[in-house]
Image 1: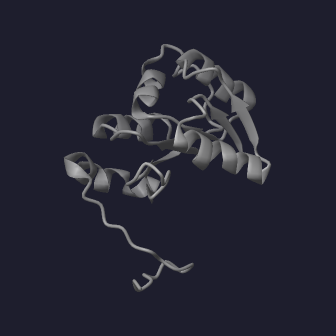
Image 2 (image 1 turned 45 degrees about the horizontal axis):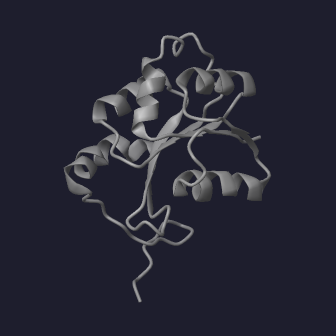
Length: 153
Protein backbone atom coordinates (compact mmCIF):
# COMPACT_ATOMS: atom_id res chain seq x y z
CA UNK A 1 0.00 0.00 0.00
CA UNK A 2 1.29 3.44 -0.92
CA UNK A 3 1.73 5.90 1.90
CA UNK A 4 2.96 9.47 1.48
CA UNK A 5 3.79 12.24 3.87
CA UNK A 6 2.88 15.76 2.76
CA UNK A 7 4.80 18.52 4.51
CA UNK A 8 4.75 21.36 2.01
CA UNK A 9 2.00 23.96 1.71
CA UNK A 10 -0.99 22.69 -0.22
CA UNK A 11 -0.89 25.80 -2.39
CA UNK A 12 2.39 24.47 -3.84
CA UNK A 13 1.32 23.06 -7.22
CA UNK A 14 3.53 19.97 -7.02
CA UNK A 15 2.41 19.11 -3.48
CA UNK A 16 -1.28 19.56 -4.27
CA UNK A 17 -1.64 18.61 -7.93
CA UNK A 18 1.08 16.02 -8.41
CA UNK A 19 1.07 14.23 -5.08
CA UNK A 20 -1.83 14.89 -2.69
CA UNK A 21 -4.64 14.98 -5.30
CA UNK A 22 -3.29 11.81 -6.87
CA UNK A 23 -3.30 10.10 -3.45
CA UNK A 24 -6.92 11.09 -2.91
CA UNK A 25 -7.88 9.84 -6.37
CA UNK A 26 -6.10 6.51 -5.87
CA UNK A 27 -7.19 6.06 -2.27
CA UNK A 28 -3.61 6.03 -1.01
CA UNK A 29 -2.79 6.84 2.58
CA UNK A 30 -1.71 10.44 3.17
CA UNK A 31 -0.07 11.88 6.26
CA UNK A 32 -0.24 15.67 6.37
CA UNK A 33 2.37 17.41 8.52
CA UNK A 34 2.13 21.08 9.51
CA UNK A 35 5.47 21.84 7.87
CA UNK A 36 8.79 20.34 6.73
CA UNK A 37 10.31 19.95 10.19
CA UNK A 38 13.02 17.26 9.76
CA UNK A 39 12.41 15.57 13.13
CA UNK A 40 8.67 15.31 12.44
CA UNK A 41 9.24 14.02 8.91
CA UNK A 42 11.72 11.37 10.03
CA UNK A 43 9.45 10.20 12.86
CA UNK A 44 6.42 10.08 10.56
CA UNK A 45 8.26 8.12 7.87
CA UNK A 46 9.40 5.56 10.44
CA UNK A 47 6.16 5.27 12.43
CA UNK A 48 3.76 5.28 9.47
CA UNK A 49 6.02 3.24 7.15
CA UNK A 50 5.82 5.96 4.49
CA UNK A 51 6.75 4.78 1.00
CA UNK A 52 6.95 8.08 -0.95
CA UNK A 53 8.18 11.57 -0.12
CA UNK A 54 8.30 14.81 -2.13
CA UNK A 55 10.52 17.66 -0.89
CA UNK A 56 12.56 20.46 -2.39
CA UNK A 57 16.34 19.97 -2.15
CA UNK A 58 16.56 22.20 0.94
CA UNK A 59 14.29 19.83 2.88
CA UNK A 60 16.16 16.73 1.68
CA UNK A 61 19.37 18.38 2.89
CA UNK A 62 17.80 19.15 6.28
CA UNK A 63 16.80 15.48 6.60
CA UNK A 64 20.30 14.27 5.72
CA UNK A 65 21.87 16.67 8.23
CA UNK A 66 19.47 15.87 11.08
CA UNK A 67 21.18 13.97 13.94
CA UNK A 68 18.41 11.32 13.94
CA UNK A 69 18.71 10.48 10.23
CA UNK A 70 21.01 7.46 10.57
CA UNK A 71 19.13 6.11 13.61
CA UNK A 72 15.71 6.29 11.95
CA UNK A 73 14.27 3.30 10.11
CA UNK A 74 13.67 4.70 6.63
CA UNK A 75 13.59 1.32 4.89
CA UNK A 76 9.93 1.78 3.90
CA UNK A 77 10.82 4.66 1.53
CA UNK A 78 10.70 3.43 -2.05
CA UNK A 79 10.49 6.70 -3.97
CA UNK A 80 11.79 10.16 -3.22
CA UNK A 81 10.90 13.13 -5.36
CA UNK A 82 12.37 16.60 -5.50
CA UNK A 83 11.65 19.74 -7.42
CA UNK A 84 11.39 23.54 -7.17
CA UNK A 85 15.14 23.93 -7.63
CA UNK A 86 18.11 21.90 -8.88
CA UNK A 87 19.44 19.19 -6.58
CA UNK A 88 23.16 19.60 -5.89
CA UNK A 89 24.99 16.62 -7.39
CA UNK A 90 26.81 15.93 -4.10
CA UNK A 91 23.48 15.74 -2.26
CA UNK A 92 22.01 13.47 -4.92
CA UNK A 93 24.96 11.10 -4.55
CA UNK A 94 24.57 11.18 -0.77
CA UNK A 95 20.86 10.38 -1.03
CA UNK A 96 21.57 7.45 -3.31
CA UNK A 97 24.22 6.18 -0.88
CA UNK A 98 22.30 6.69 2.37
CA UNK A 99 18.88 5.64 1.04
CA UNK A 100 19.84 2.73 -1.23
CA UNK A 101 16.32 1.29 -1.41
CA UNK A 102 14.78 4.63 -2.37
CA UNK A 103 14.97 5.80 -5.95
CA UNK A 104 15.07 9.59 -6.08
CA UNK A 105 13.77 11.39 -9.14
CA UNK A 106 13.04 14.94 -10.16
CA UNK A 107 9.80 16.41 -11.33
CA UNK A 108 9.99 19.81 -12.95
CA UNK A 109 7.74 22.22 -14.74
CA UNK A 110 8.42 24.47 -17.70
CA UNK A 111 5.48 26.76 -17.07
CA UNK A 112 3.78 27.70 -13.83
CA UNK A 113 0.40 26.37 -14.94
CA UNK A 114 1.73 22.88 -15.67
CA UNK A 115 2.89 21.21 -12.44
CA UNK A 116 4.75 18.30 -14.03
CA UNK A 117 6.32 18.51 -17.46
CA UNK A 118 9.23 16.12 -17.16
CA UNK A 119 10.43 13.46 -14.76
CA UNK A 120 13.90 11.95 -14.60
CA UNK A 121 14.01 8.35 -13.41
CA UNK A 122 16.40 7.44 -10.56
CA UNK A 123 18.96 5.95 -12.95
CA UNK A 124 19.03 9.21 -14.97
CA UNK A 125 19.69 11.59 -12.06
CA UNK A 126 23.47 11.78 -12.18
CA UNK A 127 23.67 11.57 -15.98
CA UNK A 128 21.53 14.69 -16.47
CA UNK A 129 22.34 16.56 -13.24
CA UNK A 130 25.12 18.67 -14.76
CA UNK A 131 22.99 19.68 -17.73
CA UNK A 132 20.07 20.64 -15.51
CA UNK A 133 22.24 22.76 -13.29
CA UNK A 134 24.01 24.33 -16.28
CA UNK A 135 20.81 25.76 -17.72
CA UNK A 136 17.97 23.28 -17.99
CA UNK A 137 19.25 21.63 -21.17
CA UNK A 138 16.92 18.64 -21.13
CA UNK A 139 15.52 16.65 -24.00
CA UNK A 140 11.75 16.22 -24.06
CA UNK A 141 9.80 13.77 -26.16
CA UNK A 142 6.42 12.10 -26.16
CA UNK A 143 6.50 8.30 -26.13
CA UNK A 144 3.89 5.59 -26.52
CA UNK A 145 3.20 2.79 -24.02
CA UNK A 146 6.23 0.87 -25.32
CA UNK A 147 8.61 3.82 -24.98
CA UNK A 148 8.78 4.56 -28.71
CA UNK A 149 8.88 8.24 -29.75
CA UNK A 150 5.56 9.56 -31.05
CA UNK A 151 5.88 11.85 -34.09
CA UNK A 152 4.89 15.47 -33.49
CA UNK A 153 1.77 16.74 -35.21
